[in-house]
Length: 376
Image 1 (cartoon, rainbow, N blue to C red):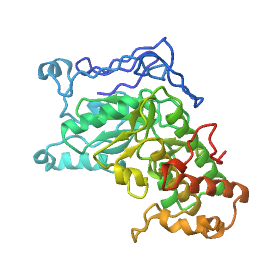
Image 2: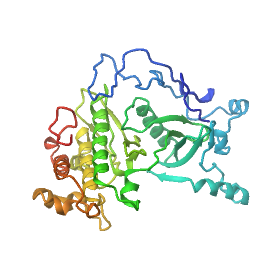
Image 3: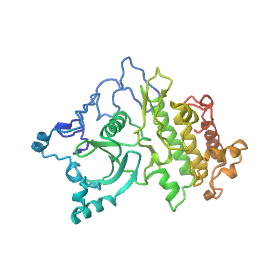
Image 4: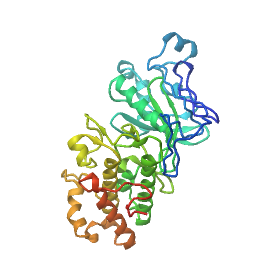
């Protein structure tokens, strides 16, 4: 079951309670991009409707309690997502049962509303009773322990994130699966707009997306007591509102980076090829500068209209480097723009991209208000 948050609290069934209380104390996250220091970690949630108490009572359910409360983890997902008029998620039907024509028909109608897939999850479109459209992220890949880890990691970070340029978490549930419910972005992802839209993205909108994404990253890196490293900045993880406001999404790989730490060292490589910073690929180093590199690749995609890795497996960074070195804007600019762009804006964004994809992380700028990053 998922119940969307009301004015005071964020509710789940009693046997799988995610407790959320209002926090009246000092906020450790802020939207201004500057950090507030506190003596005692961890940070408290930014959302007024979230709290400092974030508890998860088991990833398995008590069978007797399920029978008493009427919750069934194997039931059709409509029964699990209370408050949704149309959930658009396929039911969890055993293979033998799915062979029945009625079950197959029901499952097929839901599968048609699949709007996205990721490494561990699938995303479906739903509609609230008030008509509001939502995106429901359902974890589908990996072992039970892996799913639980991904779910808790993303939920634990999203509960603290509140910025115009980050995705908006509305609800979650663990009955019948693990689900996160977000506001649905009408235009989908930046990737779908750049790659699949029949109407080409004009330059002014590309600038707006670049600036908004930079603001979102600055918030993650500088706006919280514990810095958040996203680890998978790419065009498919930038959602667009109807006004082309970008929102960073998919925090499944994100990590906290305490102030006293310089970086994380990771053993398992996760993310998207074409966006990996050299130090991450070679040494497993994760910090703000790895996100900055990925952001530089994203800027190159906005500038050129080309993918991070093309059909010949050529890197966009490798393709663009000679033109960047020679400041050859005409060769870099997306032909679909037809030369319709502001030269000064193009120069600034090209320079920013060039700085962000420096092979040495020391030479990359930090994305804060005092940095030399020339995007604004």
